[in-house]
Length: 77
Image (cartoon, rainbow, N blue to C red; front, side, top):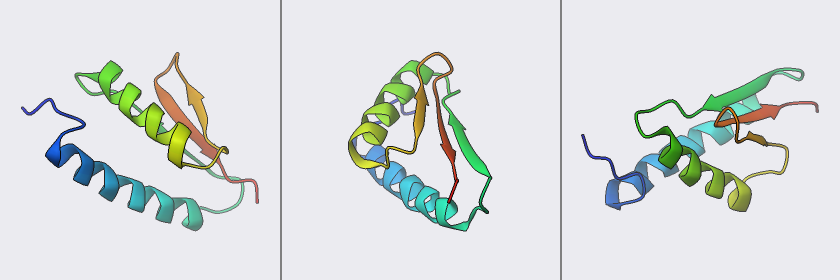
């Protein structure tokens, strides 16, 4: 198993995931939510990478939980 989350292949995988996530956000009905939780073998590393991404590049509507290593989006509009 390649444990690099930030290397040559990690960035491409993350870009694909973020594009899909942005589609999901526009498609979910009002009142629904999306929750992402870091549960891989290297969950601390995974959470650190994703947390940095969400803080810098995504909407401030996302709630980040350090305790649960998760990200929560609620569509109120």
